[in-house]
Length: 179
Image 1 (cartoon, rainbow, N blue to C red):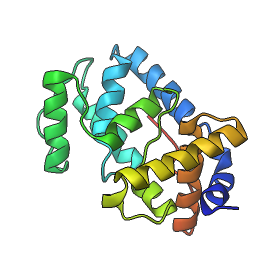
Image 2 (image 1 turned 180 degrees about the vertical axis):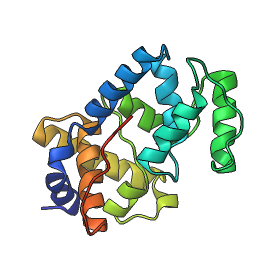
Image 3 (image 1 turned 180 degrees about the horizontal axis):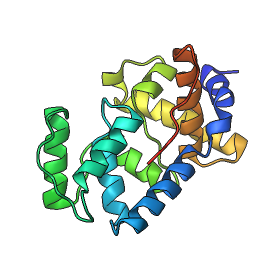
Image 4 (image 1 turned 45 degrees about the vertical axis):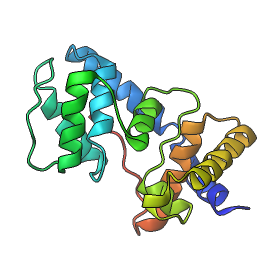
């Protein structure tokens, strides 16, 4: 059994992480008259280098009321601030990790979010994660597991992510998606 499959099986109880997140986001957006795609895009853009909980806090702060109210937030790294400013102007997400995270939160078939946890799971330096040969190998492996276990690729990624998270932290608690 491969390391990725072992992590996948360890995290299998979290296979619906993205579905749970999508449902929570949809409920929140409906209650606050916020376009769900906009909220998910900004949530993805604010995700680098922050916890799930902090990620939600920042995104909700940006969407004060029911419209985007973006001004630089001091706690965000400059690259994230620039990404949000670009998105406000263009509604485009630049960046493989953030765009795939948005796709996964939107439950788009074939999406695979590769982040720091996935680089740890595959024992790859994070900066090399999107090198064509490495990226291709990881995507191929996730697709293999997706087919073997009859799950969407974003579900397989969520399982591996959860398994890696459980291995890394002694308490083994995977962050739940809460709004």
